[in-house]
Each structure stands twice: as C-alpha cells, then as structure tokens.
Length: 323
Ligand code: R5P
Image (cartoon, rainbow, N blue to C red; front, top):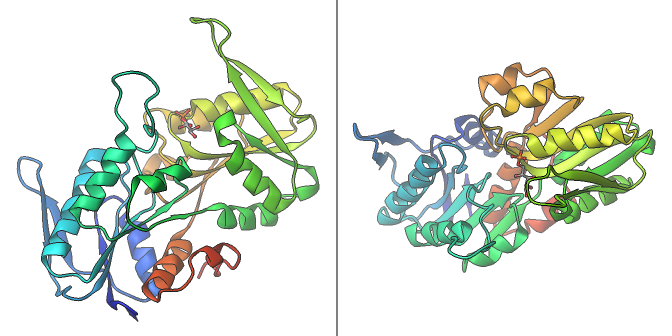
C-alpha cells in the first residue's frame, strides 16, 4: 500500500504480534521483514530486512509488560529506520506504558510519561499514534503530532448489541475517570454514576461512596486500565451493595498483572470487556468472564488516513466495519 508520503511500511516489535498482523490484514499490507531479538546478555538486536528508504513507516509496539524491553525495542526499531532513510516514522503505541506517572504527586518523584515521550521523540519518531491515553494532556509532552485514538466507538457498538439500553447506567470507578465515562454515557444516552473513594484517616481502609442511584440498574464500569483489578472488583462490590442488578466493565487496556485475572474471575463482575491493545495471555483466554474486543480495524484505518493525509478525528463519527 502507498500513501501520500511514499510506500507504507508496517514494522512490528514483539509486544503484540497478533494485533500487528491484524492491522497488516486490514491494510492489506504485509509486515516488513525485520529481526527483533535479544543478544545473549538481553540487549535488543534489530535488523530491518527490507529497503525502507523514502517509506512512510509505522512501528507497531505497545509498551506493555515487560515494559522496559518493549520500550527499548520501539526505540531501537525507530533508530534503525531513521538510519535507513525512512521518510517518516510514526510510533503506533496502542498501550502507552509509564503514563500513570504524568505529574509529580510529591517531592523527588519523576514524570516518567514525559521522559518516555522524550525518548520516543529522540529515537526518531515524527508522529505518535496511541489509544486512550491515561491522561489526554500527555499529548502535550510531545512536540510532534500525536493522535490519541478512542476505543469508545468500538465499545459503544458492542454495548448497543448486547444490552437493553433503557436499564443501563455507566459508572466511573473513580473521580479521575469521570470525563471518559461521561463521554461513553453520552454516546449511549445513559445516566452516569461515580464512585468516590475516600480514606478518612491514614491506616483505615477506603470507603467507596456511590454517587448516583444505581439500584436496579445494569451498571457498566468504564476505565482506561485494569492492572491489579483492585479498583474494578471493589467498584463492582460497592455497586452491588448499593442495589445494582448486575455489573459489567469496559476497559481499554487489559494490563492484568499478577493475580488480576484470577481476581476478576472470582469476582461478582458479570463480564470484563477489554481490547487487544495488549496481547491476551492464556489466562485471559481461559477466564470465563473476560472478553476481548478487536481494535485492529480502528488502528488500521487511522494508519491509512494518516498515510493519505486525511482526517483521523472524523474516524470517531464514522467507524469502519470490523472486517
Ligand atoms: C487509575 O487512575 C486508572 O485509571 C485505573 O483505575 C487503575 O490503573 C487501575 O488499577 P488497578 O486495576 O491496579 O486497581
């Protein structure tokens, strides 16, 4: 495939080969031949095995666990492309790791999201494309164009297929996620509730105050990340204790570290729906109440529009079909 900036090359790191292959299928463009492996001591070795001179290159790599390895792969692949005279390099980072440290919550702490933005830029990225950034303002950490895509159109389509919207209430599991949850609630014309977590005194456990009348409703929790699963499972318990009929969750990035999959499986959550921004593990595949929504068509279409210098934002009014 060719765009306005030369032939398109899709280069994948090792974080999510399934998603990279699906994006390639959507674009009817095979992945560029490249070796991305380790030296015996663990250092990353990269060799691009096709000519990329003058090409519009898209490097597909989530900085998911192991985050440091995947980040280094992304940086080194871009360095290889830059030194091979690629015309333009877009870092396609469906899951942007290190995003949760985006400000200094206390003295002597880093702003890791800014450091990672600097690394990506210095390695040679001309543009960045990502999905549901933990905080939209991280785009401002880059001085290069940054497209933050939203999974919400894919989620809305699924929710409309699966639920009787008359009884649905969208819930933000914390105050920080209200804007995201409100956006989804608006798209399906559903009311919004908020969970306010408070620790009254140091050493006491958090109290979950549910703001909104959830009794009798099917509650859909909306968030960007499920990591340990603690936020999600506690929120589901609080909603059920307040009379919710049942609880589902739509969360973009299934980080699901440690015992998270087991925690979610054993919880009272009817279903957790995540996207494949992070490659699903065998545990996720086997979990009875976790389902994965594919997003390759969303990212693939955004890549195509970027390559043809077309609007990416209009994609969110006019989502292409999955296949
Ligand atoms: C926090 O601000 C995020 O939006 C998520 O709510 C959080 O990262 C989830 O983490 P965990 O699953 O470990 O509770």
